[in-house]
Amino acid sequence: MADFSIESGNVYEAISVISKRANQLSIKLKEELNDRLAEFASTVDNLEEVFENREQIEVSKHYERMPKPTSLAIEEFLEGKLHYTTPDPVEMPLARELF
Image (tube, rainbow, N blue to C red; front, side, top):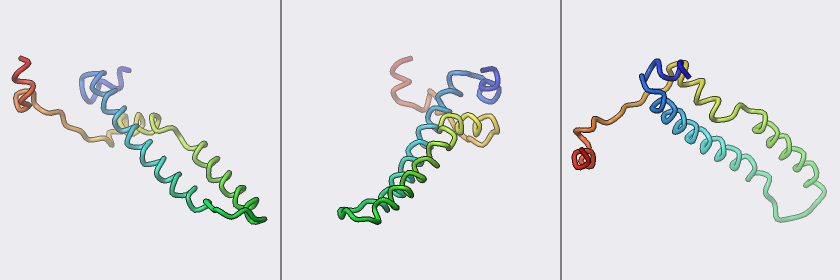
């Protein structure tokens, strides 16, 4: 946890950034998987379907073996690959009303 606060100075801010990046990675991986599995979609049952199912299973297993998006996001954050900015509270109109 101490490593998270080194760059931002705030553990909660770091976790928020990591969480948002993990969501981005998750959406990207899910889209990739759906695109690859869409290649196997067929409306006709035939003998080739058994072979295609094997390929489909291999594709699914490949994505299951990949590191989880949260792990990838943490790694990117700790390596300094994530760049983010936080808005100044004075610039945000809602923040002025609250303070």
